[in-house]
Image (cartoon, rainbow, N blue to C red; front, side, top):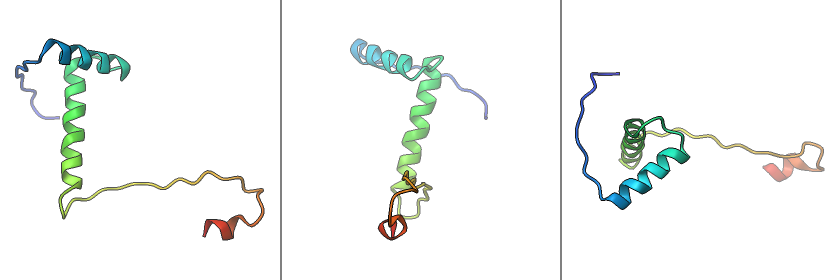
Length: 75
């Protein structure tokens, strides 16, 4: 990680209360950690939306291998 820089953020009280509730639900240890996570997510989504952006994903299938004719149905 690079050098940390502090900056100030001004928020409406209601927005701050909602943000603090989100931090609690997601078990962030502090607001800075939550902001870093949100910024990383926003930057990643912006990258994916560019024509040359790259993304990775998975496809997971959960099935009962005892079911009849499964291979054909999956194809």
